[in-house]
Structures are given as structure tokens and as C-alpha cells.
Image (tube, rainbow, N blue to C red; front, side):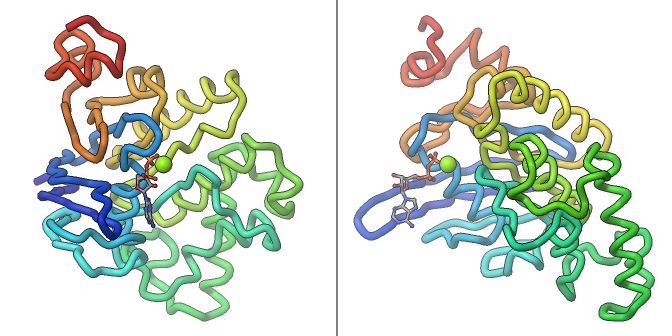
Amino acid sequence: MAAITIEKIERTFGATTVLRHVSLEIADGEFLTLLGPSGCGKSTLLRILAGLDVQTGGSVAIGDRVVDGVRPKRRDVAMVFQSYALYPHMTVQENMSVPLRMRRLNGWQRLPLLGRLLPGTKAVHAAIEIEVMRTAKALGIGHLLARKPGQLSGGQRQRVAVGRAMVRQPAVFLMDEPLSNLDAKLRVQMRAEIKELHKRLGVTFVYVTHDQSEAVTMSDRVAVMLDGELLQVAPPQEIYADPDDRRVAEFIGAPK
Ligand code: ADP
Ligand code: MG
């Protein structure tokens, strides 16, 4: 079964069409990258998968469940934003706890400690603390839990944003240009860390970038997007060796 099935998604804003007939099946455990220039509709598509935006046509299923109209926290996905979207007044510990404090969160039953406890009780607060600590340590930010985002470097903020997504243990990670605010050296290092995370967790990643070298080094398959359309979906080598379309060839700079 596919992890995500996107069927003929369309998104218009007034007279502007931002996504046209986007169809795509993403396999369970796959690392799929949406690659395309700024403004082509990548974030809009990712937001629709997360339930943060609503398509004007077509349908999305996560696993075997059609999720059209289902609110974000009831979907089995977690999103990492380009801007990280951390709460500035909260500590790292509090930021990372937010998803676990949401009641009736989809996937709650999967969480090793929390699944067996009643929401809102003291035991749950203690379990949340343990869960956040475990995740923070795994990401090398265990010593930063008492800090606020303003007291962190870009790379540390990025790890907190990933950690906040991880604590939910979602079936699908959605990442919208998560490295674009980092300097070049850290960007390359974090690529490897995200790939490592993908390997370790074995869940599905939908990763958005306009950076071709990120797409090539990280992905099982790349979906090339231009002007609201998916032009080619294939393993990266294949896109370079055999671009389907003149526009794909031009975008990636390969001869056709
Ligand atoms: P990308 O992430 O690939 O840079 P976006 O999905 O953010 O692209 O945007 C695609 C297009 O949709 C852009 O032209 C953008 O201006 C337009 N767009 C996005 N959100 C809205 C909105 N809420 N209202 C009107 N236009 C929008
Ligand atoms: Mg974007």
C-alpha cells in the first residue's frame, strides 16, 4: 500500500492556478523530494498534505485513509517548516512538548510511554518530559532544553524543529526546505543527518527543496515540479540521464 496517494490535486487562488492535476503515489518508507524553482507550488502541495491548506480539486489519502477535510493533528504526519516556526516565548523543552500535549493526537497509541496513560494526568507530564529528553539526546540537543529559540544557533533551531516533529512518531515526515536557512557547511552536514534519521526511523519522508544537489544526494525518487505541474517523477540518476521533457532538462541543466 502507498503511504500517500495524491490524486488530481488542483489549487487555485482566485483566478490563479497554483497546482494543476498533481497525481503521485509515494511508497511506504520512501524518501521523495519535490524539486522545483521558487514559486512552482511546492509549499502549497506540502501544506495540503499536512492539512494546513485545502485543495480546490482532487483527493489525498494517507495510508488507506482519505484525509480530505481532516484536521492536521488528526493526520499521521508531522511537518518541519523552512522558518522552523518555533514558539519564541517557550523553551526548547516546551516547544518539543507541544505535539504531545495535544489531546486526541493521531498516533498517540504508538508512543511507547504515553500510549498507556490518561491525557492530562501528572504521569503524562512526566512521560512527556522523558520522551522529549530521549528525542533531544538523540539529536544532540539534550543540553539545550532550558533555552529559548532566541538563544540558539540556526543549526540548533533546526534540530529542535526536527525534534518537535519526531516526538509525534509520525508515519510521514513533511519537510519544507528545512536547511535553506543554514550556512553551506552545516547544510551539507544536516543532509547526512536527515538521511540517517530516515534510515533509522524507516518511515516516509516528503522533502521539499529548490536545491538540486540536495535532491540528488538524499532522495529515492525526485518529483520535478514546474509551474504547478509534476513533470517527471523518477530516481535522481534517471532524471539526469533521461529527462522526460525539455523543461525538465532546462531546469536541471542536462542536455536533451
Ligand atoms: P514554492 O514553495 O514552490 O516556492 P508556493 O507553493 O509557496 O511555491 O507558491 C506557489 C504560488 O502560489 C506562488 O505564485 C504564490 O504566490 C502562490 N500562493 C501561495 N499561497 C497563496 C495564497 N494564500 N494566496 C494567493 N497566492 C498564493
Ligand atoms: Mg516554498
